[in-house]
Length: 267
Ligand code: FPP
Image 1: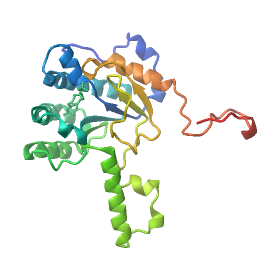
Image 2: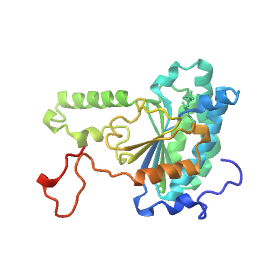
Image 3: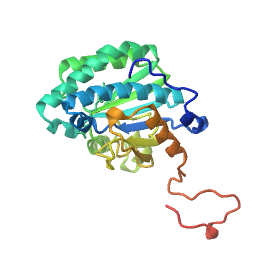
Image 4: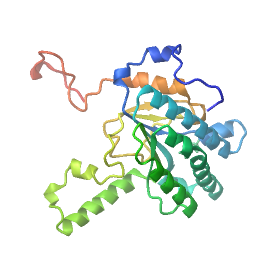
């Protein structure tokens, strides 16, 4: 975050448009466009990732200040390994550096940090920092910050299917006991409410294998802004847009005294 920037300025008109009672509890973000931002500026892609961290720090503050309880970000997908080794190593080092520098502050602000994904292929030093950061903050309850690394939605679903199949074949559960609740309880996000809102930056309109199960009913907001240029106002615009949606979860809008035969077909 740029020095001296004030978050939550009451004179910011966008705050006036937000209904504090309807702030989403859980926001998920696909932080996209770091590389393009840097290339546009004639800089190496790594500069985009560095600036992306500054933006992330700002968005954690803004979302917390607004009353959100959980923020989940896609920091490294299972597909990101196909990037040049230099960029992969840069990202891995960046995760370690950011954690080393920020964990004290994260803990003081009573934020719990959790890494979601298969950590196995990461270097030992990163795994150690992740583990100590998670255990240091495990009892914090103001805010939950989930970082998805080496995460893939399909891989997560297959893993749950395998675990349930094993439990079923060993007689621990009956196949008929498998339902959404049981499936949920095996996910990496177990115990965390599904995101009400997904934000993706840089104008791309894909889920890119992110939280496929958890996003089933989330509202999706696409911002054309590249992640390194995303900021408080862009986040507020996403929340205002979210609050204007009519969330029906496949049902129909409940209107008083409206009978089924009078209602319109609704998705
Ligand atoms: C997508 O932009 C961004 C990433 C793959 C990395 C995001 C990671 C961070 C901002 C660091 C977060 C750090 C911690 C500790 C949570 P892109 O490179 O795909 O951009 P492009 O689509 O323009 O190429």
